[in-house]
Amino acid sequence: MEQTIEKATSVEALLQKRPLIISGPCSAETEEQVVNTAVRLAATGKVDILRAGIWKPRTRPGSFEGIGTKGLPWLQQARKESGLPVAVEVATAKQVEDALHFGVDVLWIGARTTVNPFSVQDVADALRGVDVPVLIKNPINPDIELWIGAMERVQKAGIKNVGLIHRGFSSYGNTEYRNAPMWHLAIEMKRRYPGVLLINDPSHICGRRDILQDVAQTAIDLDFDGLIIESHIDPDNAWSDAKQQITPEQLGELVGNIRWRSEDIASEEYHIALEKLRQQINNLDDELMQVLSQRMKVAEKIGQYKKENNITILQTNRWNAILERAFVKGEKQGLSKEFVTKYFDAVHMESINHQNKIMNA
Ligand code: PEP
Ligand code: MN
Image 1 (cartoon, helix red, strand yellow):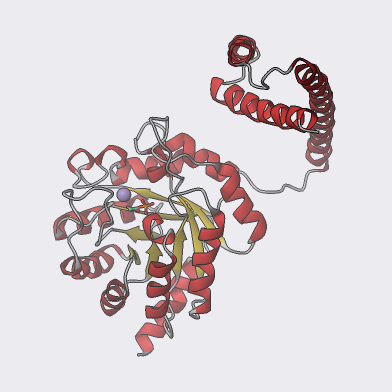
Image 2 (cartoon, helix red, strand yellow):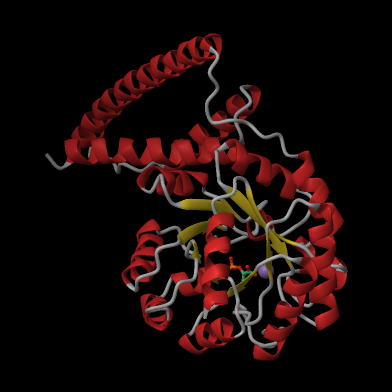
């Protein structure tokens, strides 16, 4: 009994550490693999908590769905040999019970669970009366209300130590990322819940190794509290998420390469310089709004003209011509095609709405 209390307190203290680094395999596969990964991670001196998936929610059936409860004693062994506390994903009440029975130190709720309030409630109910930290991954779809809802369900069950993991959001089609980071959503969570631990999961955002460092750096530049990154003793032959895993030593290097910045530094000179640049940004934003408002007024005039001549609002040829022109100009100005597309889509929609008002007035 006493031992449980002692363990919980020290893990709680550990979760206050900044940056907090969690690493370990996507899935526990064999005892040897888990223990070796843990020992090699501990040897880098850069890792605070070992992660390992025991139950794996896979998108399609037929792939490795996790070793199950028999892997939990391996985690105990890994903790004993490496000194690292262990974190496991849970998605059902039974999994919560099993994980707690084997003394797992930290639980996390996966992205495929956060989307489903029934599942989250099931997990939350199993956590009632338990003192264990719980990290909640964002849902797979870009809906922060679901993310918040999951956090509230867990908090209402009496869990005091909750944290958030930003692992990106799925989207249709091939993109640079496995899960689009949509950083603004994580930033919004940080704004709404400034005191809540927020860590970034570059592995599931990237889905590949070559951009892990960049995404990790971006997260740290955005003042995230830490990182969770998958690592494996033999990444290429991992039973799940092989493409995104790196060796424990590479993980150590990646963390070592990060440029740490302080959120605030005392230097007055720095504050003044920053304030000036921020003022410039404000001015430019004001100008952009003015220009956009002028653009809408011109669109309204066109709307008036179309109304008088009874022409449809949408002229596909004209729209294509606008986009073609914008891509060429945008590229010259250093604006990505992705941004130009999104920007013109938004401007175009707003334009149509303005014209619609005129035409149906
Ligand atoms: C994982 O961490 O291995 C995992 C399944 O992640 P996610 O829930 O983010 O897909
Ligand atoms: Mn994974």
